[in-house]
Length: 140
Image (cartoon, rainbow, N blue to C red; front, side, top):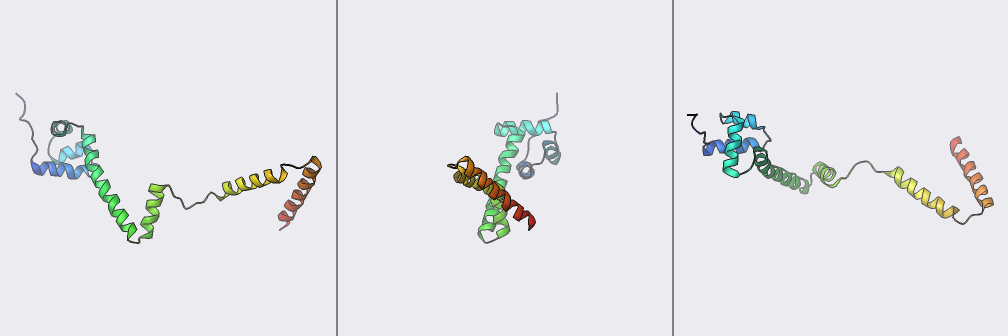
């Protein structure tokens, strides 16, 4: 006959839930309630019908929701650093603007429009003019 079944008290379940809020690994949680990780996993399955990782993620989702709610509250109360952080992490905003790509796009569009209906002679004259302008810029 084996050892008696380990049942968790309400206090031990509270400790398990508290540890799961902070993404503690199964073995560490099991150590807190003096059992093996396998026993912990079995009791969670019996109680909830899910694995330890699913249980932990469910508990963590509440913590993450509360944390995000608090960050949002702080941001809405005028904390510009938090507004910036939330914008970057949840809305994909960045400090760096991609100006080069925008300028290149505009220049290519402008050049295409300018050269669209030019004859070969006009193209040659415009190329000489551009070459002269580049030389003037280089001299600056």
